Image 1 (cartoon, rainbow, N blue to C red):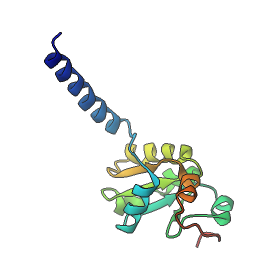
Image 2: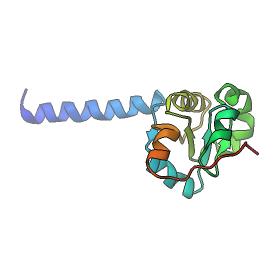
Image 3: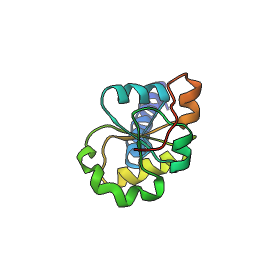
Length: 132
């Protein structure tokens, strides 16, 4: 295989990998990208439990615990084709939430890697108090 053929094969693999990743619902952003999306009007959903949210959360977020997400999809339909950022404590539950939304047709739902832990470490604002 020549270098040119190898490069072409590598580029095809990268493109295929990227498209398969989108289909598998692996979209994610880091905390700075998440904060930027929020400042641009994205809906930001915290999928932790109410007691975790009351301890601390990012300002301007909406609490929808992961266990309630599927049953609350109808109230989120207005955001189906708009940016939606999902996060939890570390990024694990929100990755599952992102998969749920992607399967439900939410085209711009992303998981925020690192969750509130990474958000806090990045020096982004955190507040305490129960969900409204």
